[in-house]
Image (cartoon, rainbow, N blue to C red; front, top):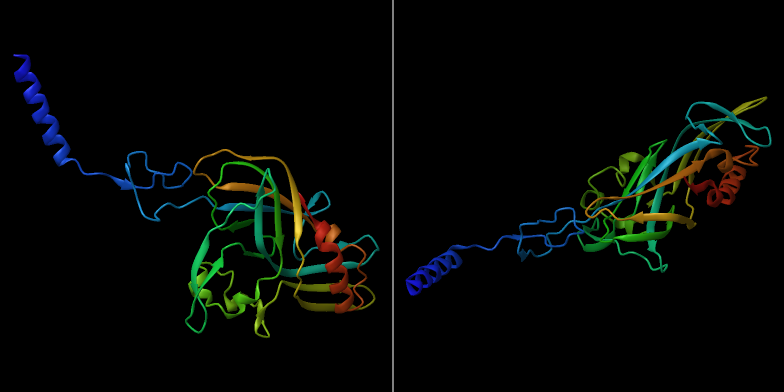
Length: 262
């Protein structure tokens, strides 16, 4: 009797194994599309969480607004009618100050040549509050965030359609001028005995490091979020708005101290 039971049990297992089809999927629990049921690793199908930098636009303790009149620390009165700026070369570092790897993009130049660029940039239009950047396979402590304002020269020859599904590199955004992407655009009205309007495009290459305190990313498959503040009171400090060159020079000096961890 026992031999008969063993025989049929073996027959059942043999039939089950022959009918079973392995489930292919992402087997990395840090990925957004991790499949608990998958038992066969797929080829390059895992997608990882993005880095979301949220920006709180402030004038001191107040919310900053375009179109509103402000007076800076030297009594210069102005209105920022509109503005745009890139955050580029966005990087995050672990607790050993090693850079956490970002993914590469499959993209093409305007001449049709294949190139690899890093999706580590975004265009902040006015007081837009979210900057999504790349994707990261990481879990743990993040010690530092850093970014620049100038896109690498390689982007000047890139086909914007092949790189970005959003409008960050669209020529209609107006940041591509004189055969290169500018860093910052400001439309400012100086209010005084005379009213003067400035339309300023800047190309600024400056790294802004922000040390992070107790920023832990422990949510598997979820986006990394880092909140920062841009203080326009600091950005427009010591500017008397005499001319565009004066404004440009002061802004270059103030940029690095205008961004802080929220």
